[in-house]
Length: 85
Image (tube, rainbow, N blue to C red):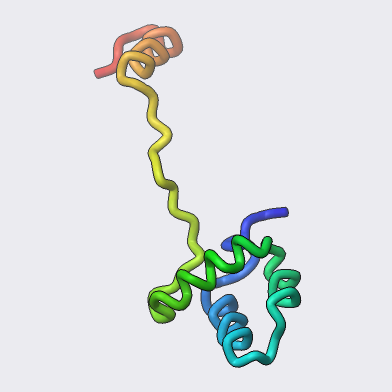
């Protein structure tokens, strides 16, 4: 199962949450549509309630995938046969 931001755009999720708030769709049905768990549903709903206009489902990496400078230098030296600049 892929991630929600790959299956839906934010506007689609906003419309679904509006339907849930207006009680035209049940939570369990919405979870099936979005293919998410109950806890993830409530996490997203909380974010939607905080500010519906800026609500987003885009994935944001919390950390960068960088190596220590010493490790990068060693990799560059061994792979390229020279020291990094």
